[in-house]
Image (cartoon, rainbow, N blue to C red; front, side):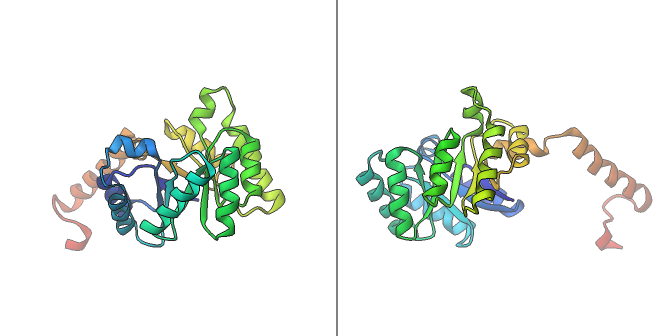
Amino acid sequence: MEFLLDTINIKDITYFNERLPIAGVTSNPSIVKVNQVKNFYEHMNEIRQIIGPDKSLHVQVVADTYDGMMKDAHSILEKIDSKVFIKVPTTIEGLKVIKALKQEGVNITATAVYTKMQAYLAMAAQADYIAPYYNRMENLNIDPKEAILAMATEIDKNNYRSKILAASFKNVNQVNESIKQGAHAVTVSSDIFVQAFNMPSIDKATHDFKKDWESIYGENINIHNL
């Protein structure tokens, strides 16, 4: 199971990368807008320095034509590094781009997936990751659980190398459901990681452990002080 961080906020990436088993970072033009990044490549290279060369960094093309997307992809690879996963929207033109870039040995994340058919075509085009948009699918009255399960079944049946990278979550339950249905990876915003631990029972348990210890050994006495 891979947990990725769906943000390009440097402070959040530094914080969670130090604390959680983060497998990588994902971005898209909307996330860039939220963070008001002025020097895009400088910013992305800083993220690469934080997470290191062995974790995945997913960067999306902006153009919507074949030639434009190819130029975007090559620019990203040149100005960041060759390990970047190029995020390509799973459109007809996008699939053409995915096929061409895979022939060059480029890492690919097929994004903006709403339907099983999109996912099946991206698998056949040898995309490394396929990113179904869980909450957006739900908002369109598409059952994301059924779709993710079907995608996972197809991968197993045909021995595809593609992994399901579920995305677009609004709460922890959606993340859990996508994993339950067979997603190999999830990309999660900072606030949802916080939600996962924002439970009074967790804080109470750690507080009670501390108080029980202090009742025997006194305050400010830890195991390493004994």
